[in-house]
Image (cartoon, helix red, strand yellow):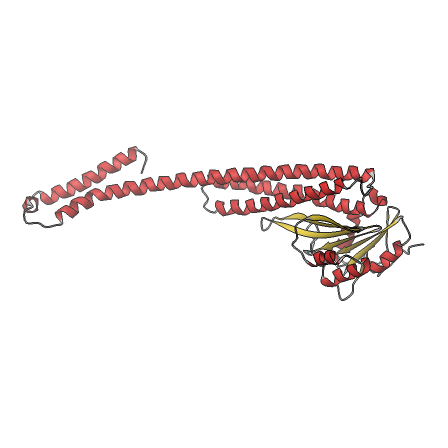
Length: 362
């Protein structure tokens, strides 16, 4: 069964839209490991028809927007389990791996660093793998490199073509749709080290802020710590997903080449997890150092406040005593009483100041 090569002037990826771009889907057909283009305008259902009865062919369906319309479309075409359809309808799930008959369901998260906001953004993907086909739904309308869905569905931008070509550039495509899923995991894991490099730069800047007594550093520490915790959770869940995939190698007869490929992904992920753990520990130590320095500065401030309170207490006490105006106070009628009182107050104040200055309280 020959596959026609439909070419559009904007690229090789066939796009289908049910209503506007509400259920826009980037469709690609692979023939014996060689990325081929489905005819222009091929729908996801037509792509499945093209691969029917052809064990060397595979269809890739990429939904830049995981709309309700897109979920209904793939649920009807693939006859998905109702529980799986319910999962596809709800974003914000923890990364996980589940099997429904011959359909493998993955929830994974990529990380992307926003340098302008100094923030880490996460994008959630729902991946469906079945014999001869793989579907990817972008729940947050972002690709793993931060490309928005509006660019993925825009043929003029070429972003959709680049995204699909990136997934289909591996030599293991002839081994089936699992190779695409593993490739996506690999690209997601490869996206973590650049994020960690930027987080490391932020950490170094925070260390300098801590010792420069910047009052805004505490908030920055807490914000970066939260980002590192989110990274640790995302990486930890990916570790579990990869471990579950490896546990199923024998049962699902995964080719040895794919096993080796996933082992490489697991090795990269272990390094990511170790670095994230180091950053979390380092930020905890920075927070403790900052708390110690803040307490020390507050202690210095309290010394100064206490010293000035003691200096002001002496003249206040003398003034209070002679302000009682009792008749039997001979100093009130003494001609040297006033100068002596003032001299005593000044003397006490200067003496206490010199004492505190010597103790470095002032």
